[in-house]
Length: 64
Image 1: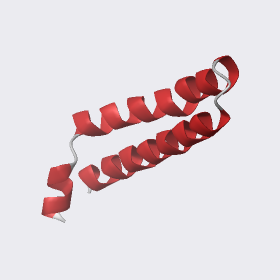
Image 2: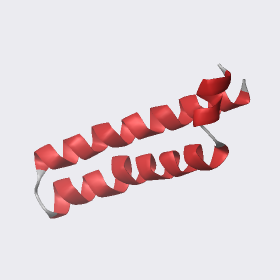
Image 3: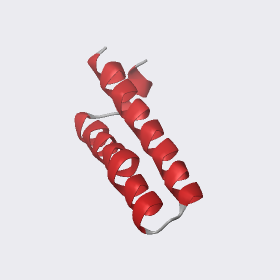
């Protein structure tokens, strides 16, 4: 568990959350609505949510 918590820090988790939020809400909407790229927008939204989940898990692992 020590090695796993060593991989995550508060700064890495914060950056992952910010990137995930940007990809899930801003970038995906721009791709879908402005550029009319539906597949790329959905992919960006999925990857953004993965970043958000990993960031939250990182905060949980760091706090344990």
